[in-house]
Length: 457
Image (cartoon, rainbow, N blue to C red; front, side, top):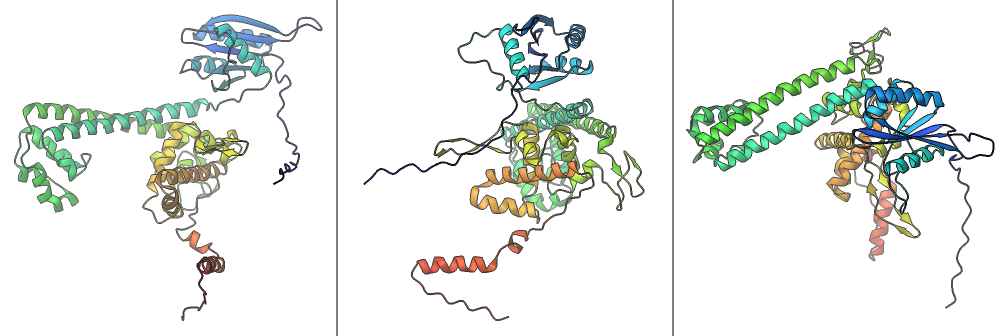
């Protein structure tokens, strides 16, 4: 058998990025906790000479960095790059930005030193400066000051909510050790469960008396609650520890409420989050009427299934309100880590993986996707359809990306409103004749003759 000749590959023309000395004057900073090494790249001092690098070590204090900003401006530095090392970069970025210096934060993976080269702070700063002058670094998204304040409050609230969840888990473990099966019948977060635990701490041990403390729908489960509490071994030390857990939960509830008020206040100070009334008036309380021209940003996002107002505020804290930072919805999805990373080499296409991205935003969008599971909406039906074929995990990622795509469009065009396509959208878009022909071909492949007879109306 002859050897097969390789097919001719068609040539393709791809527009390249410009890497020919993007910045004449720039700098790179290798940041650390107490200080940083600054390398400034300057043009040659004489015709035909080589470019010059000026190195100095600067203390990581506001006064020292402010003085550095003056020197950088005197050098005419067009761009300053630094790696996102822990939180040490913040003082450098914020102070230089406040003094009018062009600054960008870059991913450490993009600025990694070449293998085999010696690694020192001076050489890292020089490498950053060289990559900057050639335009080989992609800046990371750093939100403006008002969004940073909102993000600090939202992330602190999220941390306290997680702490509260852990405290409930510790309380449940304590009750299980005391042979109290209360959590098998009712969530410990409900008022009924807390009333029973308070009574147990006060000394009540009668299962029926404790079950009588149930309120609302829990009263229908009084018998099950009494059986779950029967035979408990809830001693004084259990009561003391349960008191500590409940007090900590109450403390966290108060702090979370304070942060929620602070998040709302931060949003009201951002004009881009305001709505526009029917008469064209704008302000923190505008755009809330039924005939509003533009809804407030939180209200627009809260119309999406699975997105509550609290979740909408947390999402805005991560993405900001200026969607010009992301050229399209696909860039935002990639930044959140909800887009697959291509892994192709020759004829091999490996299974794509999700990117790293913003873990906070990815978690919030996944939470919204979980919220659509039991809704009779397009997103809920999309989640169920994908889960049947690809599994629940992939379905949640797919719907989370869909939700983030919707969010980009709603924030990019404030006048836009969310419209649900309906749970039957896929059925309405199905080509019935094409589907019938597909089934006929499958039956004929099994050796059967098929005759189609329409059903009588």
